[in-house]
Image 1 (spheres, rainbow, N blue to C red):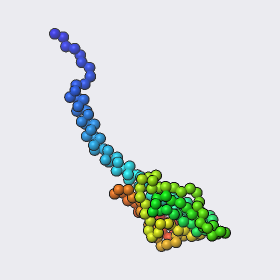
Image 2: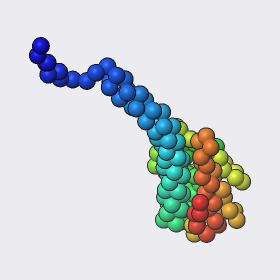
Image 3: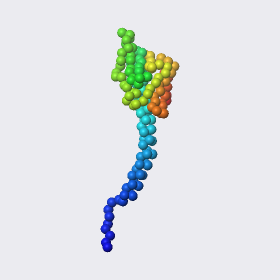
Length: 149
């Protein structure tokens, strides 16, 4: 009786490999999902910070009052007061940060951040909160333009 050389894996070996892959997936997928959610919140907060820096630069460049509007809705728009007509004009395009990063945004004390012609805020401090699920970033914007997390 001769023995044949068999090539391949047995059914038991394949089942063990599938079980190991399943256990590794069950451990890593929730961690990956949480990391992606945290990254979305961080990216949205960075987008709000960039919009504020842009609005502040516009206020000083045009020597006019400027506002970032739409913080509650998440669709941010920069408005600048035209000194000749006295009308608020949109500067650039609106950026829908909430939909883009799948987050929620709130602002206190108002739904906008106001900046005067010297780049100073209207109020002592504006607070913008960006969150998704349990992940939250609170941006505090001082009257002098300093942003802290």
